Amino acid sequence: MAERMLQGIIRVQSPEGVKRITAAKRETVATFLKKVAKEFGFRNNGFSVYVNRNRTGEITASQNKSLHLLKIKHGDMLFLFPSSPAGSSSENMDTSISQGLLRPLGVPHVVEDEIDQYLIKQDGKIYRNRDQQLCRHGPLGKCVHCVPLEPFDEDYLNHLEPPVKHMSFHAYIRKLTGGADKGKFVALENISCKIKSGCEGHPPWPEGICTKCQPSAITLNRQKYRHVDNIMFENHTLADRFLDFWRKTGNQHFGYLYGRYTEHKDIPLGIRAEVAAIYEPPQIGTQNSLELLEDPKAEVVDEIAAKLGLRKVGWIFTDLVSEDTRKGTVRYSRNKDTYFLSAEECITAGNFQNRHPNICRLSPDGHFGSKFVTVMATGGPDNQVHFEGYQVSNQCMALVRDECLLPCRDAPELGYAKESSSEQYVPDVFYKDIDKFGNEITQLARPLPVEYLIIDITTTFPKDPVYTFSISQNPFPIENRDVLGETQDFHSLATYLSQNTSSVFLDVISDFHLLLFLVTNEVMPLQDSISLLLEAVRTRNEELAQTWKKSEQWATIEQLCSTVGVPLSGLHEYGAMGSSTHAASSAMWACLHCTFMNQPGTDHCEMCSLPRT
Image 1 (cartoon, one colour):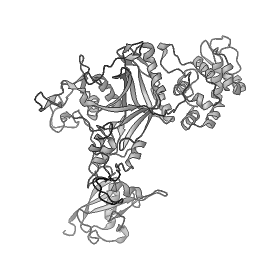
Image 2: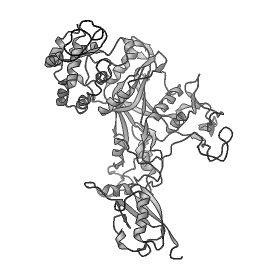
Image 3: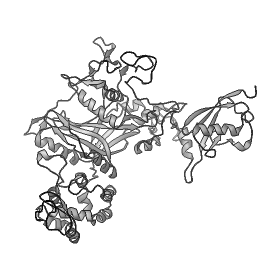
Image 4: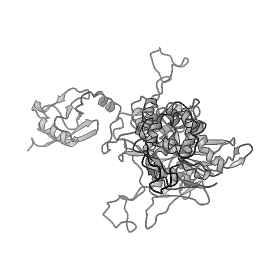
């Protein structure tokens, strides 16, 4: 009986976390290893267990000894390493353990964004040169005046020019995972404003509620970190074409930003959202309002962008009022005396951020916050158009997701936390303020200044413009601008091709809006046959583009362009029409009257019987 007494708990650490396994005092190594395999979900030969972190003192079933004889006692830590596949390095596991990159227990395995995976591996420390006046040591020594700083050092961030109010998200993670435990027990919890389900000790709300299922009250704090530290448009042309809609109509406008996330080197472990294209969905805009309409092409646009190496990184809208048309100035209306973002805009930003969560290995839900940004084109202090970048805090995302936040009708700078009703329980929401005597007081968020929810992000343009897509003096029309008389059809395509006579086919075809038209047009959609061209544009490969140009699909597009009445001289000079005359004559053709696609070699439309023109 005494020999079978439980010895205690043995801790086993692996790249997936730490688990505790109960072991008997006289339990053999083979029995213990079977328990380890079952607990971690391994096969018997799929792992190795060591006494020391440096892989010494391996414990094997062939030893045929008890844990007691191996001097393994209650509370000891063993180290498990999965069997490495051929060609992989097991040093990464040692590095992940030493850097505290293990996922906490209960956290699902997720694949983070490429930029996150890159920044996790970076040192991130801020290296300083030796101070000639304060450092009293040799060139190889270090002291408090020149030792590297951590990426979350607030004094360093505050002394940058301009000062940085928010540390980067990965610097925040380094702060949490620092220390002796290496963040072993860190878990980034998403806020929930809903009653927890499964509580059976009382009737459901509104008849009953208890402390187990009741969500905690929320005290709003200004977020110390941000998921994106900089927004950069690749070139001015990108923004100018978007603003052209407002310049021509006076109505506000909306668009989705497509680009990529890269490292922002001006801030330790920072992330930059680089904008390469703007897609304008169906919408109704007036001088003081915007209404988004259902977009049947939304999924196709995301798919095409992904094949081009891009993703949806944010949204942009205008709030512009002309002040002097002769000088070209706009009204400066958003500032510290009014507001920067209205409550309604904060709620919209929160909705977008909830739709595009940030994948995170430290969250039990597998996601935490969002990298989705908000850009507003509005008047600046100099009465010129400025682009201002924002995000809303994770607390705002939770309030929006659980439908607890409302805008105020007569005060755009104020939000309002809903009150509980028989249909919904809403936790109390507070914020801290300073009264007229200088004392810090806690206020109920009814109403709520939205400054507590906003995180500002610097928006910039590079000194040396970058062009993912070609820029033309006669660009292809942007989608959904029918109100301006700018339509996407084969007449506009023929016009575009006749005006762009470059001998490099890749330069002519590398237009984001043109590529979307080729995929989404109703006459000759190329969704199933355009992958090669998209790969050519993504990799800037002219050979691939020329290969696709010889395809039957492009010959059909040329044939459709030749039937719309545009002079063909420009097309022949460009080389697209003349190089495929034989292919075009044997390709399908579209009727100008009913747009029906007819078989090659026919002279009359098979649908309306009208002659081919």
